Image 1 (spheres, one colour):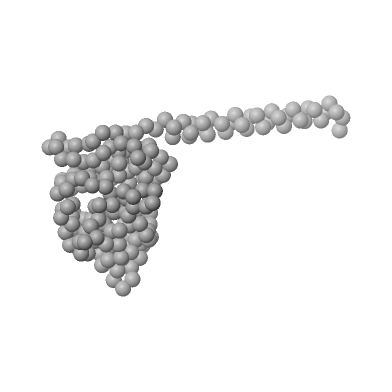
Image 2 (cartoon, rainbow, N blue to C red; image 1 turned 30 degrees about the horizontal axis):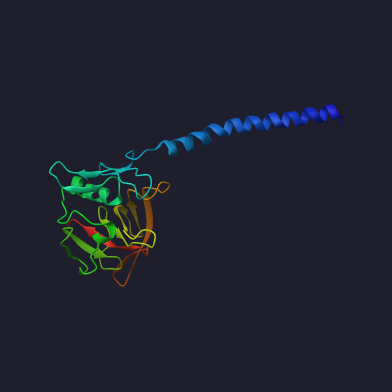
Length: 202
């Protein structure tokens, strides 16, 4: 092949690569811009008409949310604020104790199937006799990096899994997660070692 022809082919390849880059860059940029432009307070999901808001950094808060009657719903837009707002708006339920970190929602001293008096809800343990159902408030234990725990709501349940909806899972995490659910010897276990149990408005 002559030198001039080689140069022509080389230039054609360069132009083709440039066209491909131009075609792909806008979509990548728009995706990045969408995530970067999301601000705390933006709606990211909902369950039964109750919204899940974006919080940004897990430790961030944006003032306290209180109901018109003065009931403490929680710090915006933490996980606790969502579950309490869901129970307040959807069930009309006000907890006896409206304060406390997420992990404190599960009381290890309450027997399975008995009333958790601090929350005014019936408490069931993970690995107990009662299967979780839609609307239950799920409580996670703390970790070394997050001693405060986490709470979420069961958005759906089948014979073999549950899907939870959550607020403040972290900037890049999804508002929904699905976990396996199994039954053995009459005991129901959600396949997540951090889930302590669930609370229910009977």
